[in-house]
Image 1 (tube, rainbow, N blue to C red):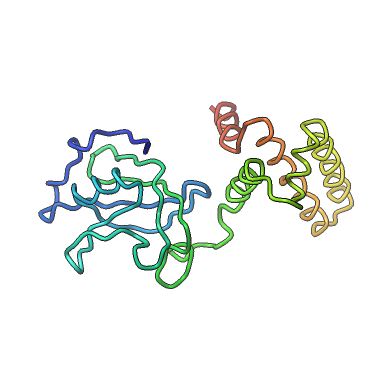
Image 2: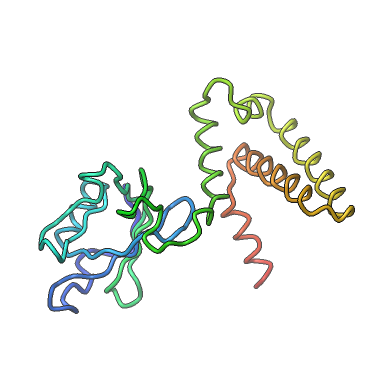
Amino acid sequence: MIKKNFNTEDLDFGKNPDGLIPAVIQDSATLKVLMLGYVNAEALSRTLESGKMTFFSRTRQCLWTKGETSGNFLTVKEIFADCDMDTILVKAEPSGPVCHTGAVSCFGTDEDEGFIRELQEVIRKRKTERPEGSYTVRLFDKGVNKIAQKVGEEAVETVIEAVAHNDSAMIYEASDLIYHLLVLLVERGLSISDLEKELVRRHK
């Protein structure tokens, strides 16, 4: 079921003479902006029915589902209309590179951008799929106490390197800290988004 904040009939497809509205595509896990496409009412209807992002090609003047030739589909998770009801934001899970050049994003942004959220998704999959030989799975098997202990150990090691003014070592240890913290969050059914909400609450 695709989450959306609008009724399709309320979208203003008539604002442009070609009956198209822009669709900004965002990675649902990393929040990286992936591409911009255009949809008409029929393309949006097909998207909602199939769960795969379908656009209207202005060049070919027909509908096309992203990935129908490459296999790099966009599985839609959420769609939001803007305040004027003439643009949509689509949060989707890409099954491969989105740009025809082979890049993750059509906008040429930093490939590493949003990786912490991507790592969070990998950790979630490790918990459910439990591949043999995975260190993450071994942590989950040991339970919350062991995971929390690892977070504490990595925090201490990060502090030691910071006090020693050893930046490269501090980055290494802080990366271990973040990884184990993500495992702890996933173990408790929480996420980075929960941390963001708390930080926003404090900021306000």
